[in-house]
Length: 380
Image (cartoon, rainbow, N blue to C red; front, side, top):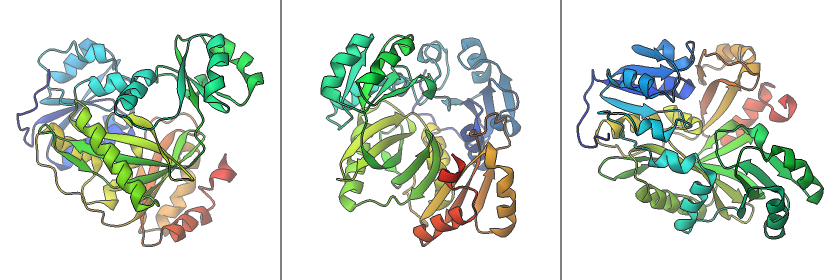
C-alpha cells in the first residue's frame, strides 16, 4: 500500500481524507505547489470542499468511498485522526505514505502510553479501569485529582470525568459504559508545549520551533512561538522529538504535546498524527509551513532547513466571536486573518484564526486582550 520512493510531481493529484479547516489549509498548500486536490468529506459544505478539484461525499470510514477517491490520486493523506486503521489497510494499490502505525498508537490511550513508556518517556501516572472497583484501587497510588477517560480517543470530552476526592468516585459508575478506561493523574502544569516534526521516506527528521499552547475549556485558544521556556527544556523537547521520530514507522508531519510544571519537569501529553492546529502559526512565522513540509514528505521532495522568521502569537476565532473580529480586519492591517467559512455549528467551534508577527510577545498579548474580544476569562 505504501510507496515511499516515487517522486510525485506538480499537476499530480493529492487525496485528502477529511474536509475540515486544516484539510482546507493543506489543500491550499498543495495548490500553491502545483498539485491538484481531491478530498473525501462527510459534510458537503466542509471547508476543504470549496477549494478541492474533486470532492467525494460520504462516510470517511468506508473502503468503497476511499477507493473512489484513491482512483484519481497519486497519494492519499489523512487529516481525520479517527479513521479506522483496518479500513485503510483494506485499500488496494493505494499510495498512503503515512501508513497506519501512528493511528493505531494515537487512537488508543493505553497503546499510546505503552509506546511512551517503552521509550522511557515521562508521562502522568495512570491505571487501566474496567469497573468502579478498579478506580478505588488505583487512586491509592495515583492520588487526587485524577481524570477518567475512555481508552478510545474518539469519544468527546463529555465522557471524561475529573475525580477530586473519594466522594466523586461513586458518580463515575454510570459513565463506565464504553469498555475500558484510563485513570490518569492530574499533572499540576504551568504551561503546555508542542513540537511539530517532519519525517521523510529516507528517515530524515526536520523540526519546527517549539510552541507554547494555551487551552480554554479543552479548546486551543492561543499559540506562542518561540515558547517561553529555558534552553534546557527546549533541548529536552527536541531530544524527545528525535527519539519518537526515529521510533515511528511513519512518513509525514506529526506532533508531540507536553505538560511543563513549575519545576521545569516535562510530561509527554500525547502524539498527534499529522499537521495540527497549533502549527498553523508557522504559515507566517517560519520560512515553510507545516502543510508544505507534510506534502514534501509525501511526494519525496527534499526537506528545507526550518528558520523562524519572527516571533508570533496566534489566536483562535471561535464561531461566537466571528463577527466581532471583522472590525479588527479593518484596523489591524499587519495581522494575518484566516476565515474558514465552514459549517461551524457550536459557539466554540473553530471558525478561523489570526496570527500576529511581533518583536514583543508580551505587548502583542496585551493588544489581543485590549480588543476585548479574546479575553478568555470574560468569554467563558
